Length: 340
Image (cartoon, rainbow, N blue to C red; front, side):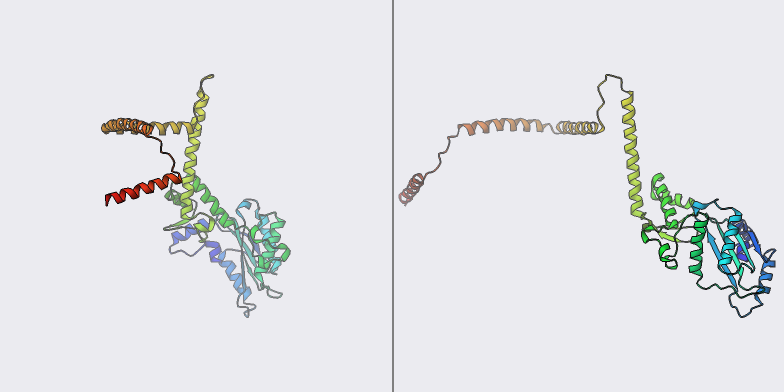
């Protein structure tokens, strides 16, 4: 009761006031009880003492709604949903209160009930996970709420969703924020600052991780945004923006062109011309720096011409026949004997 009315216990009175302002706790429903926090606690304790053998007389449930359903439910709708839960767990005729909080992005409410009543048996809270799961699915259908990730093992076979169809809204929100950050930011530091403004704590080292307001931690790689992927996506976005800027300039130039005037060259042709001009400039600079290269080029031209004339003047060699080879061998033998 203290937490639901005042938030977590703080070290000083000033911090406690800030915590209460953050929670903005509001009791929207009393059932067989009334008053402030202290009065409610006294009433619950007095009734619970009627059955001291029950070690856990308190039932507590927190019901959270999807972000997509923000503002969709009225206060009376929330009261009706809480009363349905009271029927499900058999404490409709016992003490309970319904309290709403606004300290998180999604709307949520708390239901605290006394399992022991003035008369009748103690409320049964066995198999509470399965019963709450079935109850939540019914409320989603009755009030046309967003169907969220649910514990499949507690559902009937016909109600279960395939693994591929299950959606983790927490991860989807993180991915959506990261996608916007990559679109807008120029480097990883700006991405970190962007995500911190969205309420995340960012751990940046060799990798990157994000902690949301409910203290749930995700590695970047778990949502497809590892540190390497973020850097890669930022580079791709910057390249795409540069290309779009060049295309826009080219289109604007084409629109300013007078009718009948020769069409301007494409971006690719312009790049080729720039490369060719740069090559010519480099060649001219080299020739200025090395004047002897002119003489070398002239010598190569003259030498090439002389070589061509010599090749034309050389007699054509006749192909060797078997008889020609025999004569050649005989001539080599005679010369050998003569030299001896």
